[in-house]
Image 1 (cartoon, rainbow, N blue to C red):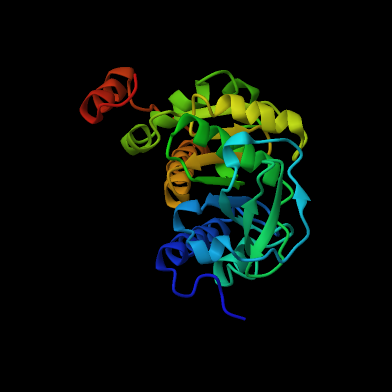
Image 2: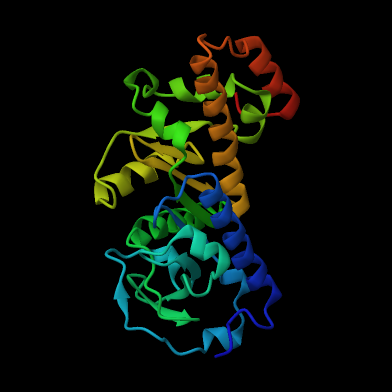
Length: 269
């Protein structure tokens, strides 16, 4: 069977990025078993031939109407699929879906009838909001960074922007490359509507959100952008925890030093 990627270099490039990031998540130890999810909006890579493709699955409900997703196309990691397998065989462990005109359902069109992640409604709700805002953000990533999850077990870190300021202070690049910091969502049942709504709320102000005792959810202009922000936050968390393991509390950059970074890079205050 001919893959939808054949003869479509732009689409292949975006799916290849997903495969590359999936490999990084696995190599970092952030994607145990089938943990984590990736969804990207690939509508800009879709041509008329793809739009005419018949469905290879039944119609599935999203669970709510998302009016800005009409006619949009997404590549999604499959439910129960492992990131390490997505890295090697993306079209066997993920699928391209089409949102139908009712904006409340979707169908799979390629390459295989791999059902998307069970958290697809949450991902699609974020994409719907990004289209409403015209933000240009096309990727969502959920993963389990070890050091960040460990820090979320300390309630002292879970106040608004407490962890953001701490992580920014560990290394200058964190403020430069994750300028909005880290939002916090108190523990909710994974996959629940409460978790989805709380995440949407935090993503109004942040690009990366910590799910207490669970993992992080990030949005980005593409999947690399989303990964990079998680990566720099995770590096800062590791620096902090390594210092604590060495027997001292790291001094961190001063407020004046962090303000200098903001001024030089024209970052939000």
